[in-house]
Amino acid sequence: MPQDEAVIGCTGKLLIGTRGAAGPGEILVRVRGGSETFLAWSEDPLPTGATVLVIESRGCRAVGVIAWADPLDALGDPPAPAEE
Image 1 (cartoon, rainbow, N blue to C red):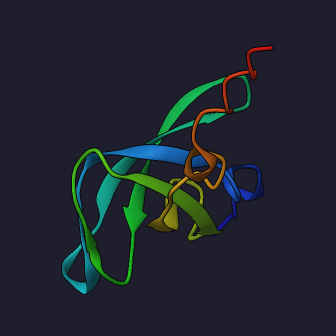
Image 2: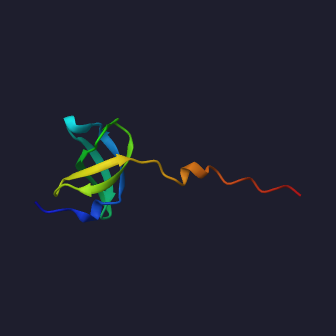
């Protein structure tokens, strides 16, 4: 089965939550200058709307994902400039 390497490392939103080993969900990923949907498999169930990171290709239209939080969001807003 052909692999889709271009999608590995991309983030996306789950349109349909995953069910862990019980079955895939569906992810919308921005890739190749547009948006595409893939079946999304994860070890643990993930809810609809979760942001996920694609960690593997499981064929041409299926991927493995993990939950993802943008590390830059953890930095918060930059401090306001000090008043003189």
